[in-house]
Image 1 (cartoon, rainbow, N blue to C red):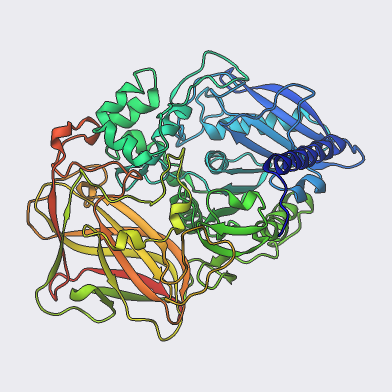
Image 2: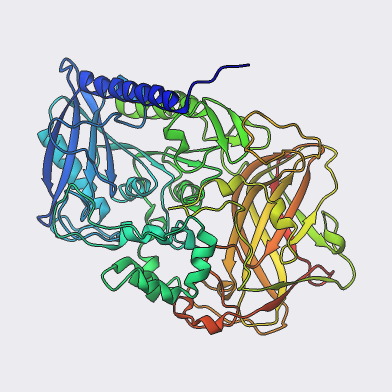
Length: 624
């Protein structure tokens, strides 16, 4: 019989190894770098706390590589150093002056915090008006004047919210800012993170604590408390909460962000002013945007930032990388890259760090030369073939637009529908469709983006349409648009569309499949999206449905690069709840769902039409 170590011994060994590895990382940073901290004055007199790691080797000059963050630039104090600095170990060892800054109103910096602070549309050198771009500009000015041994070239990188601060440095950029890498950047809070096309992302409700409270002054300790739901069952917790107005029990008037969310359900000037997208004009620094195909938090951001810069700035170096990652996976290496039950390969993050990210910053900051770095315009990972592909532009110019039509009998094909048919389901807010089978209450979601969707396909309130088994590979590369013809018996409804890759029934398991899952007939969610139906014509001006009147719904799903392999099937799922990923729609039109009463939540009968006159379809871009 095989002998096994007692659990306690295994824990001690693991703990000892972890401490050793952590200490080795600390020692590497301490061996190569020294640390100083500064409070840098901004043009309006506010000081921003800034931590600087400087190479001990003073025999050469180094570029400055900066990250601005709301999540703490710490650890603070002269004897406390990060275990790792920079975007990767490669850049840390290459030698840069690494700068971390607490943004205005956070941690050790002064001032008031503002989520996605609006960007000024113009600059006056003598004005005291500020935004994230002016704070970045003033910081770079100070660093160049006060830090020694720099080569006058500056770069910025950041993931998620720091990705937004990276993108926000681009408008009216400092002339010494040469390279910017927004990674999983928030582009617009109405389409990333807290909202998707007008639907409120209930899965981010717990995060409201982090972003909703002002602090009294500089602090090294968190000044906010996280809500304790008292359970790991998120579905039950939010069902017990009932209407969103009941959330005031946890978030009062002192949580300014919760008040902003409640009072601004529509895409009004409050949200429009906070979008960085309209300001991505006249961009001078080189840009490398990075994202993950399975990023549940910020997928709109990287794709839209890249496309907007590309459209508005034809002479700017602008490239994009999209890999088989969930949120921020590319910044760490787990050995095997796995999202949910899908294994994509080994050391994919390390390969990206060494061959793409390092190359980009080295070219523009270390040894600047004429011309572009030896990188393609778009490095995109095919999530069906499990391999990297290079493109001269994104989406590829040789794509063909194809339509897949919904048919009676749950069929999906490229043939136009005939006859006069529709599919019907009943949506009950008292029993919403779960977005995951897992019993969990996440701070933010992750793995559901590649979860098996069989459980949803077998519910009566989820419509499914699928092709026959494919006789040859088919690669979707680019944007996806769902064009639905629908009717509802009530005055409001959400519409969720999912693109599914159905594996063959005899598809073999790999060694990383989670317990209780079989890859045979796996329903991989390739892409999914929601729209709150009241916003079908305008996100700014909602409009109720006329009961039982056929209405067009256009829903843009985010891009994919995915090969549906021979023998697989393509499936479309359509539903009207996705809980508690998004909040429940009462299905009775009310002016503000955040203030709906429990009695407003009612059943509705929804119809999706697939007739010659009213043909529901999915438009995709296919590589020939």
